[in-house]
Image (cartoon, rainbow, N blue to C red; front, side, top):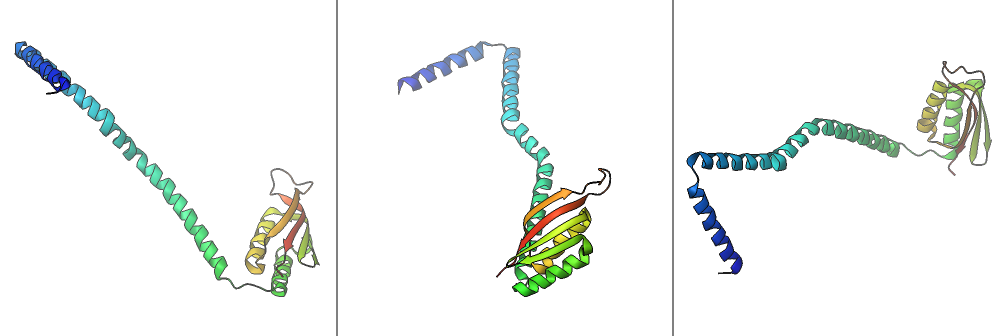
Length: 173
């Protein structure tokens, strides 16, 4: 027997002798105290963390479902964009001019040089600008490559914003 095992055996025998020397009431109290320590350890190490995880699960699930829905919307948008036929330069320019005339009218001046379209805006309502950009993206397959916009002077902070400035779009060759 190893010295450690022998020492453990001696300690166990000493504990048994001490235990048998205790009165029944003392043994019950010590047993109850040991049981209380075991229950406290079980609660602290096993049950409390599990219950905390269960309490947080609904909020985490809602957050994850929102993230999944966002990714799925992005995926649908990407697939829709991939499925749309590509436009040649002339088709893209024609769709751009039609969308611009329809959405912005006289508030936009269009100049076309080589492969860049520049649009100068004067006093364009924010919602019209947003709608026009969405239309240009879908119908002409163009996104602005450069934008310099300023809030139109005289626009009150309480009213909807109006914009002045220029936007540039690159046409595909």
